[in-house]
Image 1 (cartoon, rainbow, N blue to C red):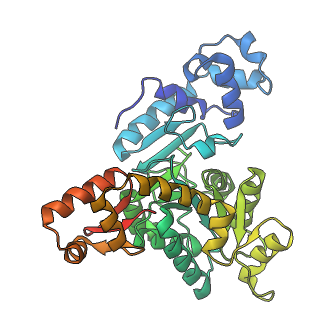
Image 2 (cartoon, rainbow, N blue to C red):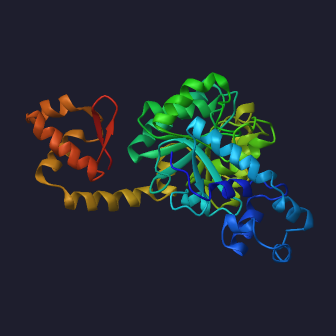
Image 3 (cartoon, rainbow, N blue to C red):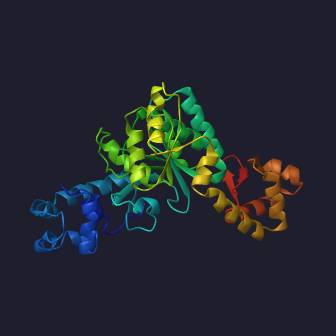
Length: 365
């Protein structure tokens, strides 16, 4: 793990009492960098809106820098990566949100940009219908190479993560605690899989427990990092509705799966639809059309088709909409192994096909 020289100041900035992410951004904008915040004179700091004398005293205290120094050691110990909101790798969609975290911590490997992200949330007390709907929806989303975001909780969250992993999709678990632990502990094995096919993500430093008040704050990451938020089963109150409200405040699309009026697990979804806070979700086509993915797919397909070689066109025809083992592709085309391997590798580099575990390939378009 490569650590920046000024990382201690970036982390310390979010550990100053009374300084939230919005105020932290104002401080950086005024001073020029996180490091310069800690050397700026008091008179200059006092001219910044929402920065009072008490806040200035906290800035000048060594406490936040000590905590940041401790955190860096814990990051090295736990193999935790870091993103600052001015970094190019920081999620662009999240960066557009006024209250986005200045610091993000993650474990795993994922491209935070140039991909489609969808958040899927719902009740912890999900029904069999809710779980099956989640699995089927993600199965249909697989061909769009979507990153599935959720919160690793019981119910719909864990169903979404498992379905993403099963369908070869990257998935992100946004957590309400430091990355030196996994909560709930029953999902530790899934968390390990996610780190191999996505990431665990948090804006909390090590040692922070999954306290109740952390979850609404965590939900802003779930809502802000994605193109849209999907609510699958929700009671009248709960974290899913909070996430939906936050997504609406960010001008992101919200989808909700309708249910029977008498079903408690559908009260929240029905409320969102009834009050025009969510689009009624029937199937994957509703998402594709509302997010204009169908138009994007046509443009991508045309672009890719124009650049395909004769051999690549044959491979695409064999794959159609299926994911196939390399031996099946070889059998259908009657090509030598070296020829298959060569063209599959070239198509992978061109981002035309997606390699899955077990030497299985599927077409991206």
